Image (cartoon, rainbow, N blue to C red):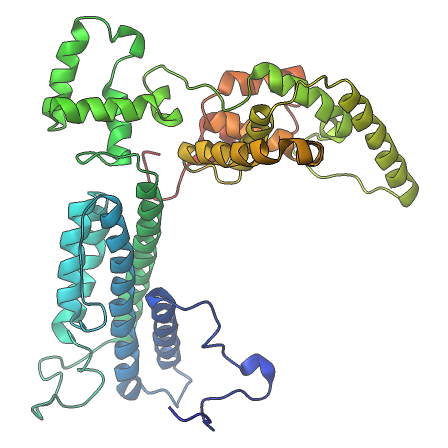
Length: 434
């Protein structure tokens, strides 16, 4: 490439400059979205009856080319993620993403490998397959709408006489929606499998299903449990070792253990630690008691009031610290941090464990140097109670959450509380069973 180029360069106005080098290393997906939007713009312009410059006979080729190319890039993007998921499962799949352009072959590979990795792909694959096969049938390699003739000088589209733009719009809109769902599912599964909560026979979701079939853990010593295990091995096509590994994962997971009547202890803290901290926190944040009728936020303060508030907080902190008597430990500090920050992620309980392990490592290494600043930083979090209650409900500590709400009289402070109680707050769109 020449060092200077008078065509592909920056210019004025600056808002019209597209970043193509330092814009975050665009993937197949970002490229696909560009072609997809271009297709939709062309289709909409062609369907505008008053637009005399975008005749359907002329615009059908760039519209269909952009549609088809977008689909190719979309599929290549999810195959990249599929390769990562396969690696997490101890498998290896490879596809020539650069050299392969046949949409039919790309789709066949993705459909086969995705459903072999996780059965959750099957439903969405069934929805998008008909339109993708239509595209592959008319323009498998991206040449039909690109040139009027093929490499042997034969005219394209001999067997396709008419293409209706309204049909194109309806089909492509539906396909785009399902391809977005496919991307969401793939990104979700990539994260899910990275947590290592699966076996060679069962995905994380299938472990949820198995956990729901197991009796309460208190009955596992009974002779009837042996018969239950035999039935489960038959139902899930598992050997004895497979079932044992699955049960071990269920017992060690906050969400799964709940299904068998068991509950893992909170990390680094217990009920008394939380009440001890919340007593102090409420002194610093009394405004939570004034949240009524599902409203939130702090009242505006003038400068004098703000200075008075800061002075009062400093005295409260100093008094509390003088009476601490070594009660605070690296474990309890890490526990408070973990249960607060987990509420931002509230998707997988495994993340809570990871948060705690990272916080414990940090607080253990630097406890003496930064214990004051770390602890007071958490005490200054005006949304600590919100995040605490969210995390407790997610981790199936509903009784403790309700107890704390009752102790501090804050039942009207959280406009999302009913959704947390029903777990609607933690549901994931398009992923039933979590």
